[in-house]
Structures are given as structure tokens and as C-alpha cells.
Length: 149
Image (cartoon, rainbow, N blue to C red; front, side):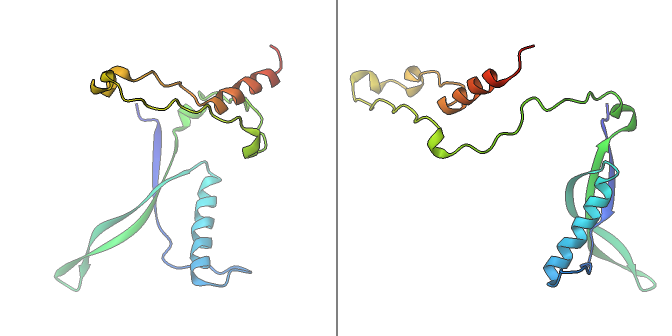
């Protein structure tokens, strides 16, 4: 089932003037920003940009290949928008933790050369923990901060 509909628009070929935007690269970036924000207001999500060949007439009987830059946007189809549940923010955004707030990771034991080490490493490999210790500790702290249901 197709979930998305797509819209392809030509990429801006030159910059757009605005107050405080002086350099050519800044004007070009402003033109891109304006185009993307205008389409985002209609729920179009920027998906990718492409440069594709296009065959065009040149004169009376000949053709030439030119390359065009286009921007591809997508959005959920109208029928699916009503079905998508609105999810409340599960966890509030917290300030970035200082590096000193994170617990130190335990040091790994040194590797010792023994007769067993001649076997393939896959036989001796221990199952790695799913999450580093710092992430497990943050998850526990976040669970404590959640309101009781």
C-alpha cells in the first residue's frame, strides 16, 4: 500500500534577495529555505534532491541533454492522516548531561594469552550488554521521574 504522495519541484537556480542577506551563497540558501518552508506549511516533508538528465530541443532538428536539479517532497496521503494517532511527548526534553554527570564505564579485564585463546574468538565472545551503563542509568532515572499511572 502506498503511504505517501510525492511532489517534485525545480530547485531554485538563483538566490533570493532579503534584508540582511548579502552574499550569493546566503541568498541561494535563503531561496531554498523559503521554498522548503512554504511546502512544509502544507505538510510536505523534504525527501531528497536529485540532478536528472532531460532531453530538450535545440534548434529545428537537433536535441541536447541538459541536467536539471529537482527537489522531492513527500507527505502522508490524506486518507492516512486521519488514521495516524497523535502521540504525546513521552518524555520531556532534558538538558544535555554534562560529561561529569555520566558514570565511568567499568574497565574491561586484560586479555591473557592461554591455550584456550588459540580457539576462534567467536567461541569465547561474551554476549555484549544491550546498552552501555550510562544509558541504562539514564533510563532508570527517567522511569523514576515518570508520573504513576
